[in-house]
Length: 99
Ligand SMILES: Cc1cc2nc3c(=O)[nH]c(=O)nc-3n(C[C@H](O)[C@H](O)[C@H](O)COP(=O)(O)OP(=O)(O)OC[C@H]3O[C@@H](n4cnc5c(N)ncnc54)[C@H](O)[C@@H]3O)c2cc1C
Image (cartoon, rainbow, N blue to C red; front, side, top):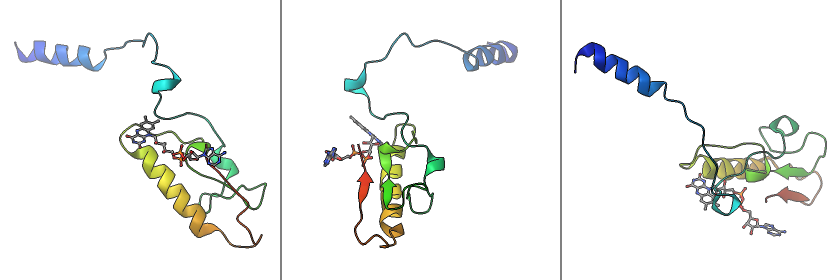
């Protein structure tokens, strides 16, 4: 193969487009899209801006990572932020939304 042919093959592969013809459904799903918008939550404490005392973390929030540990990391990090951010003002940690 010449360099020119190699470059053309590389370009074709890099621009290879295809449309998935389906998925294996919810039973095989590993992460969900959607949830509570991040703009509705404090990024430091995960507390709802409009509902003091309500916290949302992990899959309940509209954060979706690639497979490979990013979703675990998000679940743990947001949970830690909520735990550390709880200010105790309401006396009881009213609600943590998990799905
Ligand atoms: C098959 C599979 C494979 C995955 N592999 C990966 C991976 O390799 N890497 C990665 O980063 N992510 C992976 N994920 C995604 C990852 O597991 C989730 O993003 C993460 O666990 C979400 O954490 P969470 O705490 O928000 O929710 P969850 O882990 O779903 O925890 C919610 C908890 O709440 C409990 N619960 C629900 N309802 C109630 C109720 N009414 N009262 C009391 N408890 C309740 C549930 O029993 C559960 O224990 C995978 C997911 C699946 C399904």
